[in-house]
Image 1 (cartoon, rainbow, N blue to C red):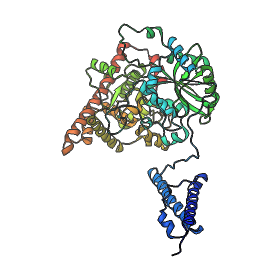
Image 2 (cartoon, helix red, strand yellow):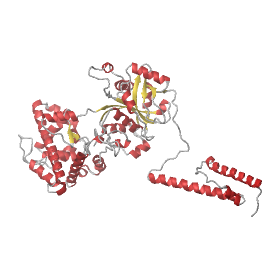
Image 3 (cartoon, rainbow, N blue to C red):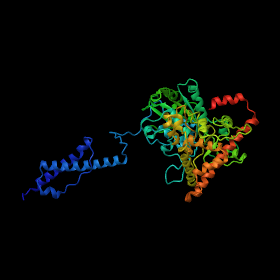
Image 4 (tube, rainbow, N blue to C red):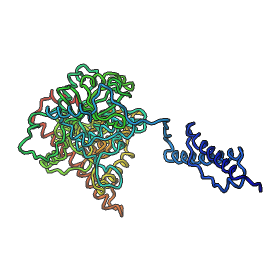
Length: 568
């Protein structure tokens, strides 16, 4: 064995350390990433003289090992999201500095504006929104995140748990809003002002949408009125009534959401959604609760400048952006119970009535007139609203869809019931809906045959509780669509069809759907059959009530004709 002087061996070890140190940092300088180096034992170095080939071999081993680790990590990521490649960035950012046009909420000037807004009553919706303020989970989810903040601020019950394994119902995940749109497309392109309005309607909110380019409804003056409505307290609200307690929950009546172009404010980016939480009169500015908190925090913006930011057209619609005035629809469950109790009727687990609107009452009256002389009926009893010859399924389907041109007409007389919170009722409802769908699959004609091939996607959307193609004249975003049962238009019409049959025919049809001798499912089938019978009897009674109301009120024929023209 060749002997190496200690000093020489020391220098060689030192050179090896320097080279290995250089090799370790060279990939980082070139933008490559490798794992930690494997330590080299001094004993190994002393066994063999160090040459250039030795370093080359060591470098190859290190790079091969770390490349394998990188490949394994990438493969694992791909396996986790097989259809969605992860976009990688060469650099990352931490927030953006607000331009001079904006005043940071947590700055001294921002705090002074908050105090001024408090003194002038401009925090009407501030506390409810600030309590629920959240950050959007995706760069293009600003509209969805804004709507979640608004729904929680209004204390809207989503009628579903916010995730599996927990009993709490709460708006947390953007997927809970998915009734109109494909979330994967939203993640890529975002949403438009009409999309946002549709989503809000589906969650049970009343929506007043304005485009800034509209000189009447979306003008600067109208925007000021909307800010006043949503943000500025009325005098009686500031003083409070004698019945109110100090710890009463002050849910806002209206919340204002804006859709605007960031670049007009001097910010980076383009289209964006955010709620307006406050108004400061002396500075004539509004507080934007930016949902992209990773980019910009909450900030004050001049009211007039924000309106200007709504004017540039949205490339997706070629219309200007604008603002939306949102308010919670009055929960009519209590009111419905009061109305039904007056007529000794139970509450259906499938649908709710619309008693308050005259147009809905008139729809029931018109249907009674139709039942007196249906297209296929030959014998009619003029003294009774029920036919002596039964109406057919095709008759009813054509009537409630205007011969296949209007799938929303049925929802003018009733709307699906809210989702039941308990598992037993949900299971019972599902049994009923499944059996109705089974009966409909054997009925002729169906909606596809009635409306033609172009309606296939529309009917599928209606059945799956989606309101895609919501701009179509054939359908509209149904109120509470995401919070209610999956009662499609054809299923709802079937309930009306049941109410139009004679009692014996109704019993016989339901016996086919829910046989009483079905062994283990006998009890559930019996309950389902009873619920359907009760629902049909409720509808039958309501249609009869409509006729009596018409006779009592003696409404003018011209008024009925006008309502029929505008309402159907």
